[in-house]
Structure formats: C-alpha cells, structure tokens
Length: 253
Image (cartoon, rainbow, N blue to C red):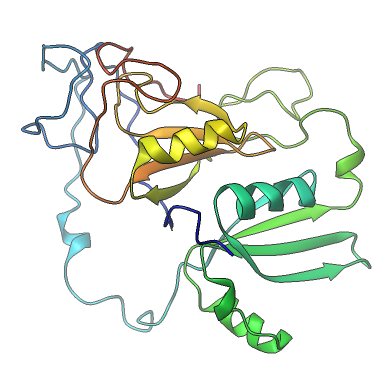
C-alpha cells in the first residue's frame, strides 16, 4: 500500500536563467508582493542586462494541428543498480512500477515508474503497456547489464559533474533535475531525512526558500516543490533557519 506516502505529482519544472543575484534573492516561483520570508530585508535584485524574450504567445490558442493527443510520457535516466533505484522511487517517493521490459539480447532492461495507485495497474502485459504509454510524467529507468559491478558513481548527472569524463574535469551539463510536488515540502523532507535520503538543498538552504533538492542513488537531483503556494517555515529538517542564505547558484557550472 502507498497510503502512508504524501500525495505527489511528477512534474517538469521551468529551468532558471543563469543570472547573478545578491544574497537577497527572492524565489523565482513567488510573486514579488508575496509575504514569504526573504533571504534579507532588501528586495533589490542585481541582474545582468538581458533582453527577456516575449513568450506570452505560447500560452494561448489551440495546440499545433495534429498534436492534440500528444502526451509528455517519459524522461529516461540510466541507473547503476535497478533495485536501488526502484527502492528509492517506489519506497521513498511512492511511485509504482507500471511496466518493465527485459532485453538480454542487448544486455539492458527498462523500468517505467510513475505516481499511480497499484490497484490501477492491469495484470495483462499488453494492458500495462497501454497504460504506461498513456500516463504522463513516467520515469524510465534504464539498466545496462554490468553497471552495478562498477565502483562508485557511473553516470554523469549533468550538474557540474566530473563522473565519466576522461580528464576528471567537471562538465557544463544540460540536464538539471526531475521534480515532484507534495502537499507540504517541510513534512516531506522530514520523512526523507528519517529515511536517510541525501539532500542537495534543504527547504531553507540557499536563497530560495520553501523548496528542496534531494538525490537519488545515482546522484540525480529531484526537486521538491509545494502543490500550493510557497509557504516557508522558520526552521527546516536540517536545522537551517529561513533567514539568510546565499543567492541562486547555477548548478551546471
């Protein structure tokens, strides 16, 4: 049963522009008029001179002809150990394994997980395929045979990571993170801490308050956002106070 897990939605979050901010950074997800606790009493933002593109046209009108039934169905990440990854996504985040396929002739398997109720997963293999292909926001975990025997981390996470590079230098990665939303970020993070999850950023860490980043077994970042307004609590699960904190950090560098 997954009844003890917080209700979660798997989401893609908007990538933040790499701008230089002072320590008074205001969350990019909160209106400037919000009463949310700021990193300092100053609301001045120091930003480089950038001409912002007008994107309003992409929010209106009908979908492009012929795409009305397209679904953003999956994001694929390679994982070192499928059991460790399934333990994290199913037992920590509360997802369920909808479908999997084994390809021994090519020495890899794929596992599709999503935040669904187990009772909705069909017994029939073909029906599971159909459900999976029509479920938005699935995560495809790809396991290449033998990776579980390698020492240390195997795959580059995209965030200023040196894993897999020939010279040991960090790369400016394009991939950033996946994201979930929860009813209460602070309660969810208390649970994550109790389960031994590694934090990249606790809810009050840094300049952006009320959101968190945790790591999966391969080091991929999972952002944790609220399903409603950005509420901030005075102290988070790691004992970090809401007041203070450095500004936004571009994790690709």
